[in-house]
Image (cartoon, rainbow, N blue to C red; front, side, top):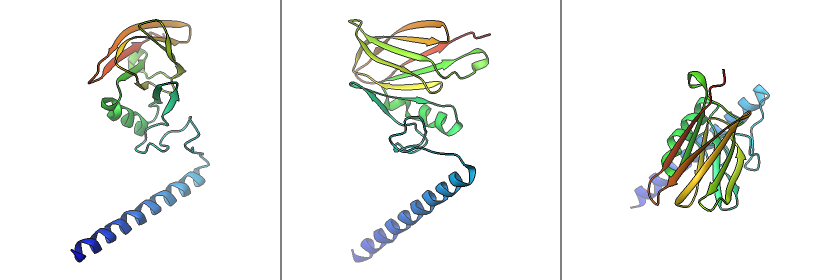
Length: 165
């Protein structure tokens, strides 16, 4: 019993040391490259409080959302997190080019706007209550709309494609 407690303390100390070294190394790399990262209040940077490369989760009314996917780590993190979010959106162009700066509006079945934002990358994950919605996506001067049904269990996906050539 005492041995198990000591082993747990040693493991906890090792994890703390590894995290401290990892954070210090990341701060050094950031300082060396003149790249500025973010805090949890900075909504433009990836890998904030969410960890694992997931961009900062944002809130608009009752709706939580996250968007991004420009870098490989962020893209993978968003793809892996899709199963925990009721609605996944993807924005692409010719040759499967990823698009950012897509204005997204989500309206409910009563035409009430529940989300209005601009994507920071090709992926957007949205936490919505179950129900029927219409997603309006605008890239440059081209609009698209898709009806989606968010189930009580499971997820809904919608992909938007613009032929930008």
